[in-house]
Length: 254
Image 1: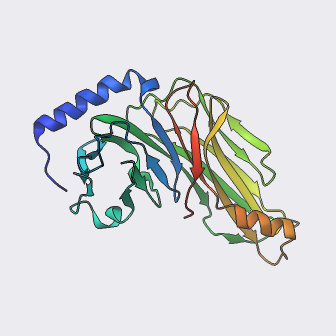
Image 2: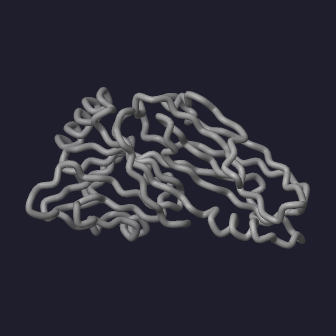
């Protein structure tokens, strides 16, 4: 990790505090574990990205990830391989993890990255019929992040995308982070069971992640096969405020 002058750290802290009070002006990118995320740079210096700087901030650490338009070679190897700078100077992250959650700074303009994660207990992807599995979905957000103005909700949906369970007005400003848990019985009539956790704000799905379990000894139907094929699809959405138009695009699979 490259060393950063104390003055720069103090400046970043001040910038963070200023922008936290006006969330409507600060873009927030929502992604899912295993997906992709593209963080927009809203302060590009013409004519190209050769002077672009990207800085990543989490409690206790400030990391220069892009220096003068190049990925910092001193960034941890496993992370550097997942980072790239796009032609418009946006920072692209592949195979997103919860470690990527934080505050990003492009030429003194902030972007927040929040990540949705689903875990299962037991964690097997193939189980006996009539077994029970508990699914836990959590939204990881940067520390002290106030979120955009509208309320958030987490919900579980089945293969037909019918809402099964919903938590309204997630209190994402508190610890532990907003989460929703569901216990599912794997009935033997279906060979594949897919549950999708969705994060919704302002009437729009911001991001979602699916978890699929196969039932042992059950022959998959055509519908089950199509569900299994599509269950890995995730989306990444960037939003700036409750009145902004969110932009979305497909992300990579885990």
